[in-house]
Figure 1 (cartoon, rainbow, N blue to C red):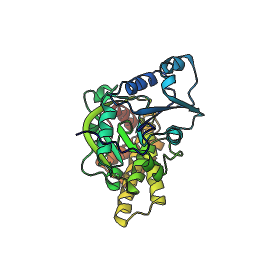
Figure 2 (figure 1 turned 45 degrees about the horizontal axis):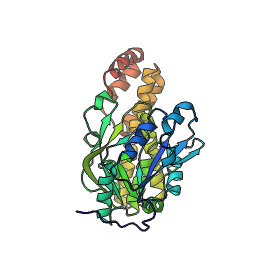
Figure 3 (figure 1 turned 90 degrees about the vertical axis):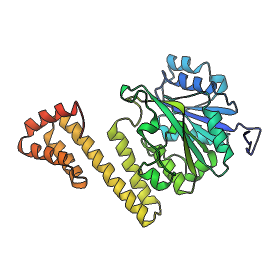
Figure 4 (figure 1 turned 30 degrees about the vertical axis):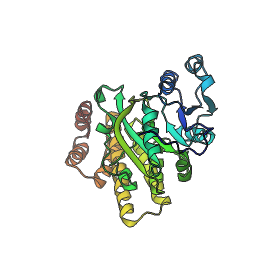
Length: 325
């Protein structure tokens, strides 16, 4: 089926590719190479340097592309501010987000724009990705680990029944603006917050399972540390609970999700205190987690910290080298 061109202004690019980066001198070149290797050519590229030093390695990575991109820079403010700067500068009707440590396969834009343009009522489309860089997830895809099942709704996003990978997302620009752009106060889970607000305001989100990009999994990527990511989710849930007029059943769902996220955060912090040989602080965090989501393992660990703190600390450190609570 031929693709229908529904653009409002044929003189402007259909797609604006949005790439923020911070201290990604060794990665930004590969991301840009994957963009300019696309079979689909009707796009512009807006790159935002979010406070990275303009060193020789960065200049070398960017130099082959400077004549073909819109290059913006700002003081370090985080991914939300960087993406918003690019969105407000963008000319395309569609936005395609690409993190600087990810790369697209050559048919990414062709397939994503075809699906989005074929359905005028659809506002956002996302796809699957190969996971690379982490031996534990080698050979797997994003949706095998972070599954998406059923229709995408505010509720399904809230409980992560559907999960959206940012670099696999193409969305109508006006939809993002209508939802309020990225929240610049958030340093983690800012993308999850935006997808929730788009769904809340009636945006139609769909997905397919074709693998169209590579997602790099690395320990120093923003949001990777579990505690930081959970803290971001907690901030998002609290904000949405305050700001959105939710029906009672959805408010209950959000409150339950918040309790679970806070308990997982306390477990993560408790684990860090155990590994730091701080029995008192570990017990405080784990007691709070157990009060919200009690488990036999937590109860046994807390009993050990009360009765035999030194032995329990040694045993816990050995245990955490192999597994987690």
